[in-house]
Image 1: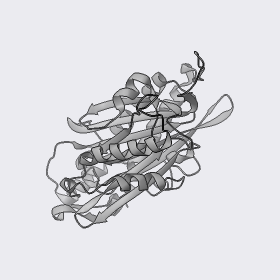
Image 2 (image 1 turned 90 degrees about the horizontal axis):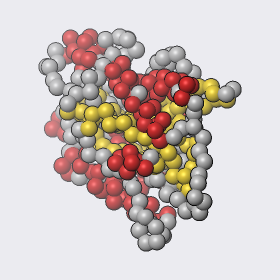
Image 3 (image 1 turned 45 degrees about the vertical axis):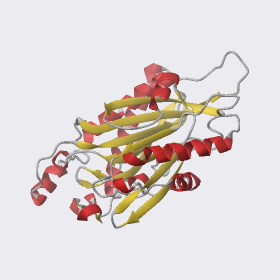
Image 4 (image 1 turned 180 degrees about the horizontal axis):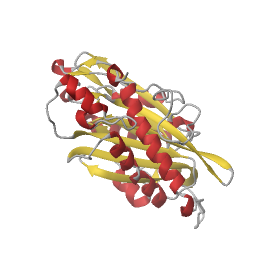
Length: 340
């Protein structure tokens, strides 16, 4: 799971060095890979119970808003997450939203009848370079299959929603990492998962090495604008309120800068962070609720963990990439080809 024989940064990694080191979090994929069809779905399940009935606190940072995600506005307003998180390609957001709504309706017969509707969360990147995105190949059953596939140990790279993604002119996709920190004598975990589709080749930095310039020299690549997108999901078991989680999500921008992104005009750079430590009961009858939060004089430990985990997750998505030929003969190479 690790990037190399040592991890990025100075903090301890979790057991698997995956977002699922946060207890209760699971990840599943459905992959469509056949010549010009290179796409799919990745599902993140934030806990193992009924998310609508037991919501989690969450926060969002829209670093650059060139994107078509669903559900972020309500999270920003109410600070709660009540569905799995679905990652897919840009033009399949509608299909994925409908599938996720059907999944949630099956889990609670009162949704939209005697209680509120549900806020589905679907996030996207444009995989159109390698994938026939106009073909709308992702179907509702693929979304449900990704949810059903959710588990603790999962694949990275060209799988699920990351199948056709490009990153820094190379093969991008799904990447993940985790960090462990100590608070009041107990260990807590911050995990990250990314769907990477951003960056310009010449700007790529791997743990301080300006490898993008080295690769561009070999490839004689043309100057390009920074387009694409990156979706970054941060999970933690540190008790945090939605405001604190929004602050943590902002620190994902640090990771983007460290790998060489300049948050270009044409890139949708979005981070959603959630904590599993507090449960908000949808059908609670009490007037008042209590939640635990971190002392903000100690929150820098979480900020560092977010920066390190997201940085390594981005690089892990590249390291797990494979050489691919997709739509119209477009090619992307694995970063591994250039690391020596």
